Image (tube, rainbow, N blue to C red; front, side):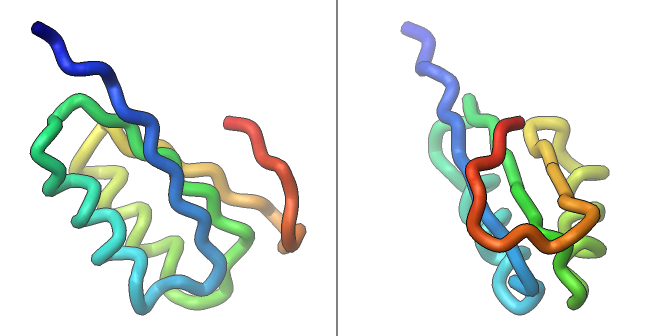
Length: 77
């Protein structure tokens, strides 16, 4: 029986200290059928660089970066 694909969302704003661990926890899930959506609100720390490195490693990861900081918002991918 096939497992369903899990949709996992991470929001980020200057989350560089933790974003790598958050992404790693998704990658290490026991179910390999997942899709990770990262929504970054124009971080000014190293969050975007870390996210870009993971994008190169795993095609199940998608990233949406705002060009300006929008604060709380409903974002669609």
